Length: 386
Ligand SMILES: [Zn+2]
Image 1 (spheres, rainbow, N blue to C red):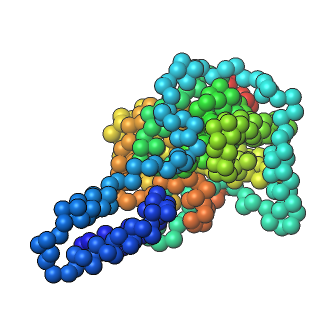
Image 2: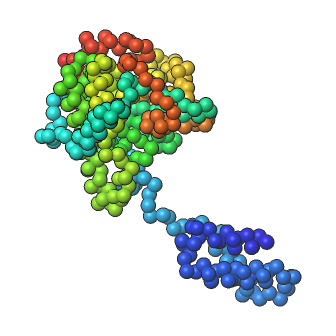
Image 3: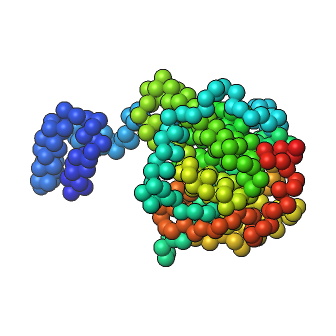
């Protein structure tokens, strides 16, 4: 009967694909051999038949060595050897601020314009995006998920790095994550940005062009900060599309959105007016309810403890992957292990929002309203320490 079972098993989809036209022949052989072996003991069974049976059984137990030609995602298709080694450019200082993306004369790509038009027509139809900053998401009872978010800021006054270990850890744990990239960071870390856009489970959001302070910037400058970053994303998406097409994976671009729909306020700073401007661009403003990295020189152990005190289902957790705060990688590894053992999911912000009800605040802040107000006097409107 064991033999009969293996015959039935041979009808599985993968087997059918691999063996194709041999199937009918195999079934006949299978049925014949099964009949033969269900008969009373056959002391005179020929050695040839025995050999045929044993080779058939051996064939059944072979692993399917024919690998599927399609890699699981665009990142693995284009970077089959994994993340390329770190280079000096990954850890450079932020370039001096400028007011213009270098390769653009008119940085207004079609989908950025369409995205904004869609937002205004929705608003005209009485369906504007909810106003305010998303702090966390209320999930249905029993649902255990959080969103890990990583800012990739580029300020003129600090390192605009790229922490490879963080990306490797997320890939290893198959943890979904959202990266908020400043436009300048995308420009100075082009290949890294392309990899994050290509990897399934990673999502990219807008973090302004020069990490500008949206509490003290005027509307015209804020629009530039938003639109140049949107446009640069689209510029990179076009490039990724050309790479995918050249490698024969053009269809995988379907998973890479045309336009970013999420925005993170640099320093968490905003005004009611700037929140309205972002709403007009059709962008969800996503902040956090958990600050993972310590802000006052805490030890790793203290920061871990403080982080776990805050994490709950539906949390949006703030990290950085730009090598500026301390202990980011240790904290992330600790958290990934903790969540994995508890069976909690790590989702992108969009996935988390779709799974529950986002909770909004009319303000932007780190832990309590107003706790970041001093930033307005410390940095200029472009966020450079000018
Ligand atoms: Zn930032």
